[in-house]
Image (tube, rainbow, N blue to C red; front, side, top):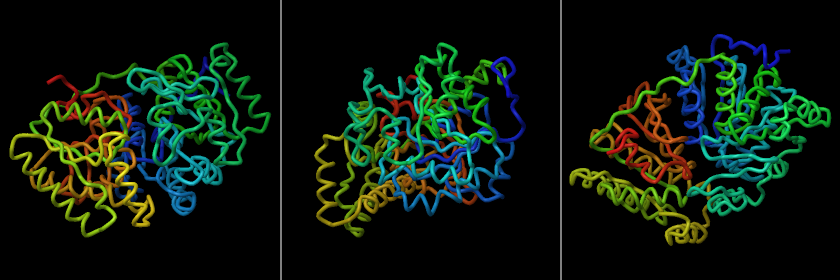
Amino acid sequence: MSTPDTPRPLPEGPLVAFYGDDFTGSSAAMEVLAFGGMPSVLFLEAPTPRRLAAFSGMRAIGIAGTARAQTPAWMGANLPGVFRLLASLGAPVAQYKVCSTFDSAPGIGSIGRAVDIAANIFEPAWTPMVVADPGMGRYQSFGHLFAMADGTGFRLDRHPTMSRHPSTPMDEADLGLHLARQTAQRIGLVDFMSMKRGEGDARLAQALAEGCKIVSLDVLDTETLVEAGRLIWERAGTPAFCVGSQGVGAALMAYWRSTGLVPSEPDLARPGRVDRIAGVSGSVSPVTAAQIAHALDHGFEGIRLDARQVVDETAWNKAIARASDEALACLGRGFDPLIYTAAGPDDPAVAAFLEATRTAGLSGQIVNERLGFGLGQALRRVIREAGLSRAVISGGDTSGRAASQLGIDALTAIGPLDPGGPLCRAHGEDSQLDGLEIALKGGQVGRPDFFQAVKFGGRNR
């Protein structure tokens, strides 16, 4: 077995193959690897052999999915085929990519159910779990996850967004305890103190001897990030099956750099500015609300989409058409349109939407799908009729459904904008939007001027 002094070399071909349980998180995983010098592609659906061949030479291959918003039954029907496809790629590391705030519950987006399914295909000796990523403001200490919000760190069960998440509210910051509600597999921990004392291997061996099948790895800083990467690459077997956020890729890149397996971080291309963009948002995060407010003060024009209309398909189609008309008129007046459904969790539109859904007796899955699809349809029309070359979609659950309406099937990274929200190039074999530049932003991702950053390529105006 390799040691830190004799690192296992990197083989040819794909190094990492991952499935992301939502679209924005998937682009964040691609970002870490691509901007670390690993050519990467993110497919928006399971690729055919022909599409895989079109992106030969990629060192990281991802598939963006929607499992975060799905039931365990859906996972049982859909994830086995995806995992078998990942296994067929021959990458030494396979990953089930989850949100860096561990969005999940036993009945929706169950990470435990996904890991159970994967265990039957990859048959790992143990499954490393890395959720924290300091580059994204996520830290794990003694198994507890902390996340930054407005410059302040919060334990996840006290986080202003995650503790109030409409679908998967977090009432437990100990990820082992939270995950134990979703799987019967025993969960262990390699804590940061063991790592810093050089006892990571011993602590891992102890956890495995105790029968743990999933082992959570603390990450607080560069030192623990490197050690997490080492434990994955040198101790998890081949192929290693991991669960975690973009922190998995960040840990691997940190370890590979520390050992000289890959060069230091490369110079990154910086996207240029464009004259016009359009955006849609289905996020109710306070982070996105602040970004919307900032954008409306700096050259964007807000177009509110009444999400209550989603309960009636005819009314919803009319609402989407009106929003599209307004967005095109907005561009004609020299402003950038931003179609959005709510400005934060306290926006009265959120309560009105939930009440309309309850009154209509529709499931959250149905209305959320209609919502995302409608936003995507509006964006597609605006892009095509206005001839736009760049756009942005905000909202973790929204982004996948909206992007599916654009007729594209893959993304490659162009350049960084904000950690977790890169600018990407869209690819579609038969799509009129092939070559579109697009940013997919999770609800809790990005600085206040994120929408402007998309327009100006991350540069100051």
